[in-house]
Every structure is written in structure tokens, then in C-alpha cells.
Amino acid sequence: MRFKNTYVIAPKNYATGGVELAHQLVHILREKGQNAYISYVENGVISDDQSVTIAYAGYNIATTDNIEDSDDNMIILPEVFMDYAYHYNKASIGMWWMSVDNHFHACHRNDSFKFPGSFSKRMKLFIQHRNSPFKNKLADFKNSDRFIHFYQSHYAQHFLYSNGFSNLYPLSDYINVTFIKPINTISKKDIVLYNPAKGYRFTKKIIAANPDIDFIAIKGMTREEVAQHMSDAKLYIDFGNFPGKDRLPREAALNGCCIISGKNGASFFFEDLPIPSAFKFETKRKNIVKISAMIKKVLTNYNELQQQFLDYRNIIMKEEDIFKQEIDSFFD
Image 1 (cartoon, rainbow, N blue to C red):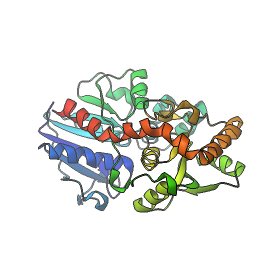
Image 2 (spheres, rainbow, N blue to C red; image 1 turned 135 degrees about the vertical axis):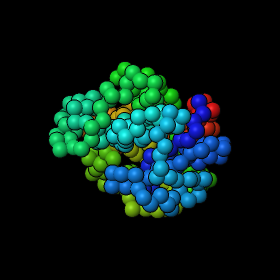
Image 3 (cartoon, rainbow, N blue to C red; image 1 turned 180 degrees about the vertical axis):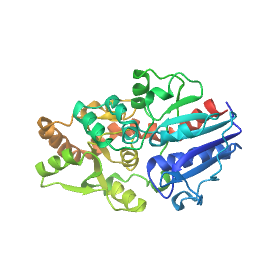
């Protein structure tokens, strides 16, 4: 369906995978001749300053702080901004589930118990929301043709279907390949990369068990520096919660890294992280020895094992075309 205007809500002055994805959607819609806009949020309200965030100046972006609440318009809300659905009564509302887990940090406290994790995590969320201002409830967004749910991952699709949602459409994402370098297997080093922002409690146990291995945290780096480290490294490990199809594993794979992951969130689903099952482990202490053995195997036999990630790389390279097809299927 084609809308008169499409507005995509995004936080101002943030450069993350999800925020870039919002800009990519607007860029593609505008390239197709549609009226699409970013509307920046700052301090909980639509910002008066709608200048384009510098990191996305290369995209075809228009911005506005004037969202017209009309039944021929669409407003797209990332899963952390669903409270904005209550501000508009006529426009179609697209709930974009770029992540599942992150939504539960910005929802009504009673929805904490719908979090697809352990009971202890649900209780932590419930306590965290003790004085929370968020009012959105999942039940408010069901059984209405005005609410449309876009899912970035099979994990999100499974969550939505499991909770009785309808009006579901795929709207995934793709990797910006600007900083991807040609793979040079000869120059690869015995380096293991990891993201300390996710799953570090378990990852640090892996690091402690392997003091002879060079682990490098992807932290405080420019995009160019991240790309260079990925170009040098043989392996990227990630035992985080995978709230959606995460970008770092894909960027690492495109730069020739092998991948070892947990089985949390989206990484449990082969469709979201399509790597051989031998490289996925449950994040349990009893698996530290097995994970350590696999890390050493990759470093020792990199040239042979990196061939097992060719299919994953090919899938990633096709994601932009798939994303555009999904946009065509819904917005045209």
C-alpha cells in the first residue's frame, strides 16, 4: 500500500545499527519517489532541531517535526518508542520490531512478564519498571487494522505469533558495506574479537580460561578501526542476548572472520544466524571447555574452517536486495 507520507521516528544524534536502519528505510522510499521523513526524538519529545545526524548525511534524508495525523499516512515506531502510538488517532501505525528484548526496557511494567527470557530476567524488568513512565501494553496493539507489525528477525516473528499478533510483515535490514575490505586470508592473525557490551559476563569466563589467546574488545573504535580489526582477526565470538539480527557478527563474517556464538534470542534461530551448529553453544559454564577447544581449532585451522562461512557471507550480501523487495511488497 502507498501512503501519502511515511514518518519514521528515530532518536537524534545516535549512530547505532537500528538508527541507521531507520535512515536506510527513509532513503530507499525517497529514492523510489515516495514522501518519507525521519522525525527525530530528543528527551522524550519530537525535537525542534531536525538537522540530519552527521553519521547519516550520505543518505537521501528529509526530516520533519510536523507529523500529520491522517488516515492516509503511516508512522513507523521502533520497538522502544511505542508510547508514541497513543499520540496519534488516525494514521496507520507501523510497529517495527528491530529488536524484541529492547522493547521490554520501554513498556508498561506488567508486560515485563511477557519477556521471552528467564523468570529472573522478567522479575528484574518488573522491578526496573517500578517508577517507569512507559504506558504501552502489547494488548493495546492487537486486533486493529491500524496497527501493523514489521519484524526484522525470525526471533521477532516467532515472538509476535506466539503472543497472538496479526498484520505481520517482514522488514529486515542490511549491512552497510562501505567499510568492508576484500578478504585476505594470508594476512589473518590469531586474534579473537568480542563485543564487551553484550554477554560479557560469560565472555570474560572464556577469556580467563584462555590466557594465551589474544582477545580484543570492540569498544571505543571508529567504524574504520572496527573494519581494520575485523580484517586482521580470524574469529569473532558473541555470547550476547541477540535481541534481533545483530550487525557485528555479519560485519565480522563479511571481513572473513569465523563466528562462534551462543544460542540466545535471535542467535538460536538458524534463519537469523545461519552458521553451522557446531559453532553455536549454550552459554553455560559446562561448555567453556568445548568453546575454548573450538576457538583454538579455528585459530589453528582457519583457512579450512572459514570455508564453512561462505554461505553465511553470501546470504549477508543479498540482504539489501531482500530489504528492497520487502519494501516494494508492502509500500508499493
